[in-house]
Image (tube, rainbow, N blue to C red):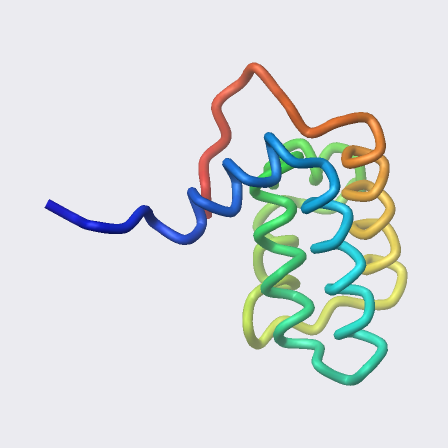
Length: 108
């Protein structure tokens, strides 16, 4: 029996119940990106996508295939500035509206 929850599931649960936490994670991802810590920024952004929109919904909002979005936010991803802006914008709007969603999201 495991003593701890999976980290990704913990982040999803916290983001869903605490909008301030979600906003702070988005702020941290932005700060890290500006500071040159792109890999860590992408990891946080990936966790936020999983906790808020899910990659399929993000794909619809950004007109970018979900597989491409997964690659962009991977440790070795290299998203364009336009794609990053679209991702940050979609996540930011979702956080502003609230993150709770009745559908089940697959945590990637």
